[in-house]
Image (cartoon, rainbow, N blue to C red; front, side, top):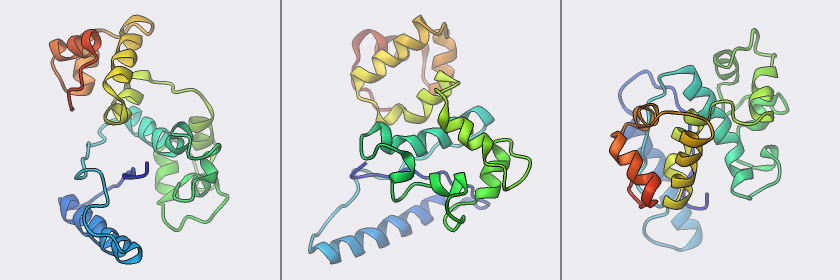
Length: 185
């Protein structure tokens, strides 16, 4: 994650592109000024996916907070300086994160009930398909091929279910599995 970051944002107006351009532009200008560099800071333009289901929301929250551990930047999600993990566990006050909103969407009855979040990050991924969709763009072609094969073989997801989840044709998913080609999603 040296050249990108993950955000889960709830917007009320259709202005995400403007906001991301401002955020990334300000950061890049400041970074370049501090380091005496010039040019791009991030690996690519931002991309977004609309979160439309509870299962996708849960998978996104889990992925975002465990990603620094899986990428071996730290051993515990609470060790990652930019993580929302400590705010969502109640270790830090919610200054950067809409803690009450996030916890309520995870099923908490009150803002002080951190149990749904702790259960989410403390257990293996419950929904392999939703978890794949969240991290699909971070996987290499080989990793994606192996994960898709596992979902269809070991976990019994149909090609049609996988194709619908990743918004691709069944034929494309079959090619990804068979060839492990680097087809950008």
